[in-house]
Image (cartoon, rainbow, N blue to C red; front, top):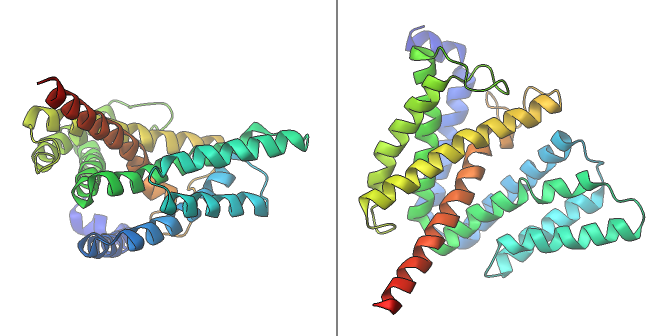
Length: 267
């Protein structure tokens, strides 16, 4: 299929993608913590709503109220990730006290709550350059896997998502690591090998983040997590790979930061 035919068949998807890229570029250019917190918070609540459906949880106003509280606390706390853990603990205790405990009700406060909070933590702890690195690696992984799979894909990657191929995943991983390695050197890792390894970990996480979302949708017998993004489906359909990638980059960059500080002290 030629690019023209592909564009014609997926016109809505491409238009939505372009709009999202332009909006994202503007937000990153402004680089304002309150703006990032607000926009990411809206995205989080939309994703949280989709997760309730994916996990088959009982919809209740308290779920949404607590999700809002989670995000408000994240904006006020220097350690945003712990907000979800704290609220999930409170909710678990409340449900147990009411003798209506259902473990599934806690799941949306783990996924996508913690990964969304981790994206905000990446921005707060390591700045806009880390977010750009994350997005570029994830985007190239996805694009490379899609077009690489179309051109060379023969071997199914996983039964969870039969349309994805091993060849496509390898091509996406290779492209993302090759380019991401140079982006990561810009004041973040400061070392090509470390940047390469982190880019590899982010890309691999992105692949499995996308696979996990597919797994949830198949279990819930849904094609998409939602329909808010024309041609793309729901918010989690678009954010799945970034959510996993964010957890990886935050963990590794923070680990690298501690390692550097420890090395300086020892020297």
